Each structure stands twice: as C-alpha cells, then as structure tokens.
Amino acid sequence: MRKNSSTGGNTSSIDERTRKRLKDIGGADIVVGIPSYNNAATIARVIKAAELGLAKYFPHYKGVIFISEGGNAEETEKAVEALNDKHYFETAFIARPQFDTEIIVAKYIGPSGKGTAVRAILEAAEILNARAGCMLDSDLRSIFPEWIELLIAPVIIKGFGFVAPYYSRHKYDGTITNMIAYPLTWALYGRRVRQPIGGDFGFSRKLITSLLSKEVWGTDIARFGIDIWMTTVAICENLKICQSFLGAKIHDDKDPGKDLSPMFTQVVGTIFSLMDIYQETWLHVKGSRPTAIFGFESEFAPKPLKVDVENLINKFKEGVSRYMPVWEKVLEAENCQKICEVARMDSVHFELPVDLWIKSLYDFAVAYNKRTDGLTPGQVIEALVPIYYAVTASFVRRTQNLDSRQAEEVINQQCSAFETLKPYLINRWTSMG
Image (cartoon, rainbow, N blue to C red; front, side, top):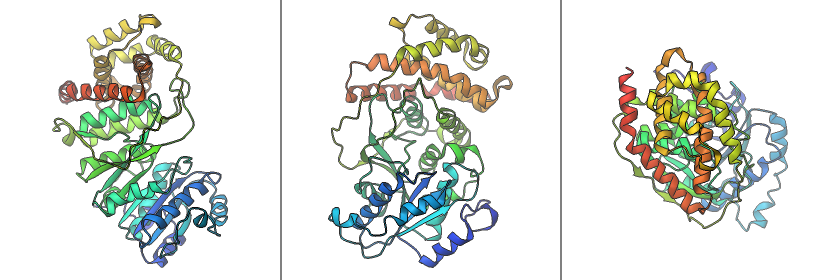
C-alpha cells in the first residue's frame, strides 16, 4: 500500500496553491528541480543555465523549472523576477523555445532538509506527468546549459531511468565518496558509479513513481542521505542507469581533517541503513560492471586542494584511547590489534593498509545494523571517524606524487579490493543473524 502518496492529504510536501498552479499548467515534458535553502544570491545563474539548456537542446518540449525552497521564498521569488527580461537569450545566441518555460518557486512542507525539498520536486514532476527531469544544486558556480542536455537526453533519447553525474575533481576532493560511497556501491551492488552522492542527476518517470512510493520520507534516510538513497534505489530496482560527464563542479574547498561536517554521519549512516533494507539484493550480487558515461571527458585539471596530513594522523591517534572501548566491540580482534599497531607508527612511516581499512569498514557496517553489544548507530558512526581520518591520511601519502589519473587508478584498485573482500562482509553479516 502506498502510504506516502504525493496525491493526498497531509503527507504531501506541496501546498494546495502550488498544486493548483501545477495542474493549471496542464502537464510538462521536462521538470528541472532546484532544491534551495536561502540561495537567492546564487540561484539566478542556475536558473539561467537551466532555461537556456532547455531552449537549446529541447526547444520543442514543454519545460518547467521548479524551485523547492526551504528558507525565504520571497527572496528567491525576487531573484526569479529579476530574470523577467530574458536578456541572456540574446547574449547566449540561443533562440527562444516553442513554449515559455514556467518557473515556480514553492515553499515546501515538512521537515527542513534536502530530502523534503527533493520530494516536493518529484511530486511536482508527477503532477505534471513529466517524461523526464533533473535535479541541480542551487549554489552551482560551474554549471553550463549543456548540463541540461547531459542529464536529460539519456532519459528521453536513450531510455535510461537514472543519470548520475561524473565530475572532474581534484584527487583529494570528495574523500567520503572516494573512501566509502564509491567503493561500497561498487562492491555491494555491483555497479561502478563514480559519484553516487552527486547532487546533480537525471531521472525518468518510472524512478519518480518508485521513489515517491517509498515509506522513508519521514526518516533520516530521506532527510540526510537523499542522493545516495536515490542512486541505490535506482540500482537495486534494476533501472537502466548511466553517468554523464559534467566537467568540474566548483564549490568551497574542504580539508577532510578540518571540516568534517555532519555530511559524514548522514551519508555513511544512510549507506549502512540501506544495507539492511536491500540485504536480499547485495548478499547475492557477485562481481561488478562498469556504468556507461556520456559526454565529452576533457583533460581539465581541477584546482589543487591542500590536505593537512599531520592533522589527520594526530586526530586518528587522539581517537584511539577515546574510542577503544567501542572498537573492541565492533572490530574483529585481529583487526582491532592491527589498528592499534598502526596507531603506534610515527608519522613518517604512517600507513593504514587498504585491506585493514576495508575489513574495519565492513565490521562497522555490521555493528551499525546488528546493534552490537547495545551500541547505538550514532555511537558506531562516531567511532568510525578516526579510522576514516587514518585511511584518508594514508591515501594522501600514497598519492602525493601522482597526478589525478594515477590517483584515480589507486582509488579503482581499492574498489576492486572491496569487491574481493566482500565474502568477509557476507560471513560477518550472516553470522550475526
């Protein structure tokens, strides 16, 4: 039974006024969704790129841009009104489309967070009976109109159900993706999706229906881990998936040792939770296969990102005494012993072996889901952070003299090791009942 239907009652993330406006439009072919939280200062660029992209690549399709606002909707509406003269069509040498693109700003209903914003966008696409849609972050500085083609065309022209982004990134940008999200998606579900937590993606009508039918919209999975959740659903429900090369994604630099935001807890917690939901899928998946990539992959070199390795190592060592009581419960005895040996290394020779990292992460995934010795999921994730610092420091040391392509090969080798060691996870998972 579909408990969280977008068509009824108090469970909707769209108010009645917005719902009426959508119905008055009478349908659309493409919906471009932009989740926003007080991004009036940056959202105009994203809107212009979306509108130009629709006009250039889909001039005979009816498009709607739906901004799902969690903050000050009035300020966002002012940013939209400032674009009324459409002067950017002349400067971009792009003809006006056959249909005017409707731009809607709606204050979503429900718990604050990207998940609720995304749900409202999916509901809007369902009401409009859209053939395809895409999602764009509202603070993008590197977006071009071509992104619309790359995210939408695989759905409309090639029949794909989900289009993941493929960015050009510095080797030390996105360490949560590189060390955890990418290798676990590869090993668990057998699909090599390089950016499973990217915020920009394309989706089909089939995926819209599937996502809205899930009973997770009131949980932390949808609120805090929406991107990895959608990727995982698309894979596990056998939608045809691909990737599109979008070039660089410019955002604020983040040293993984100095700014470990709640993103770590949210993303890793969601990945671990999904392992329980989809255990009947991943327990039987063997091997992995690549995922098609569309677009022109340039040789663009992202801006360098500096990482304070010494700080990462120190944070790991500081966590040893604090988290040892948890590690002793979570980690297999041999893994715990080896972690302690790594902690005694001096900085010059510091290295966390890849196999030890993988087995440790698998141990934590089991403990998170099996409630080991009464530990809460929050305690398990918190205790994983110092070991994540250690593997990040080790990766930086191992790749500091490599270029981006060589570092990417190291990451892929690590993903292969995750796949090779999957029987270790399966044995631990099934033995815990």
